[in-house]
Image 1 (cartoon, rainbow, N blue to C red):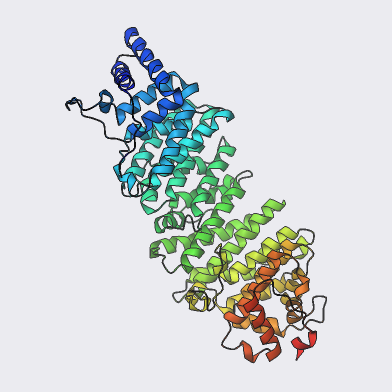
Image 2: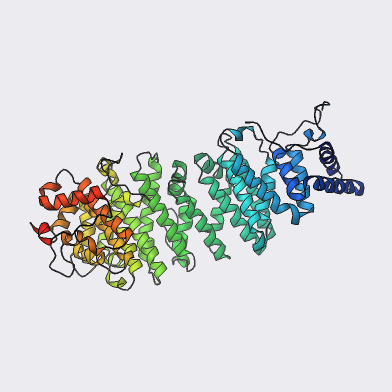
Length: 596
């Protein structure tokens, strides 16, 4: 793909060449400075100001620098030698000497060019030098006021685009990270408050690059003083003189746990999160626990009052990575990593026991932490090569009434529908880890994947699910678990209803669970399961109709081998019609149909 450059007249090209020639002496010679300024003014007058100058230089920056010994024939314009790092030198001079006119324009132009024109084919024709990477990285840390943050944002986006579309150049991320390390060390030596914000901008870029793939995460972990170690030191230092900066660093590390269609979890990223001894040790200190390998001093055996919650959230996210790696058929996590993950689970349980949530945010963190721990142990304990440690942790959880009550009790959340929803959803994800995925697709004729085809070793077995279902009853004064869920399913708060729907969907995915639901005929305030399900008018929101439809999908598509034998023909036909017509299907159904 041919590089498009702006066609310049002879005087403008000559002025560029003159400006570049003067740069070598501009700091020591007044004549050189005068020549450079004269050339700049001529170029600006010819190109319509700073924006035109930047637009002319940017395409030249991507080209290879001409050799000083290379002859320039008569057909070559004077400015043909001013390209690559030479063109960058001119641009750098303009940015440094006239920042108010050139800094913002340069950052915007590089970002626009990188995002609009770089792709897998054309990027191979562009020369990305260390000087260019350094100049762009400096723009990330230069702004000191809110009005200039856009410059940093543009530079960040440009560098990320260069890494994203130059995957063929495997050392690009490594080169960028080496530059970021130098900038990080420089900021630390400054010991100024503004340096904290700049460090987080560097960390933000580093994490974004790491999310691109395994090559990038390996580059971030390369060497004893790698860029990832810099971030870990900032996030895990204890005691910490800047807890707010530490919290920001922990939040950046937590971003590595993301797993969605844009940034699917890579093997190297999962390996780092699940097996890093440095990360594990630091998080245990912050949550106030220790193990045989990592001792925590006596005075540090309480959760950090400021960042203990953030550390617990990160441990929860790591558990989620472990669960998703277990259920992923493409996962290639090593056996050694799984052993370290099991040790992490043991210490995570101790952290949960030591955590006594007070406010709503802390209770939300507790719910996610407890469900992540139980889900992880349930899957490991259910595997064909089940872990004794995981089983022991799970058994101790069933015996720990304090933890179970804090996690499973609905009575303590009577006036908190959002917490109820979070709890019910977390319980559904423990029963069916596939629901941890952002987009849950129930198997059917139109779907290529089937829940029934998932390796049973990646799901908790029925015995564990029934223990969990019984624990829900025990934590709520022995009240029937199905009745508890149906009460929430009839709640006037849509958040609580959606949480109950997700739990009913997860339970209906299992044959044993569906049979228990169908056996519940009511008699209490909740009524029976089928009675509630077939009353379409009870749900009026679009989200609720879609969630209720997924329960029907689970019932029919996950249990198609036997469901016709446990419901009447009229009920089955009604459910099948609902399945065919979609979530918005509404039909008045006499209650007699469901009781025949």
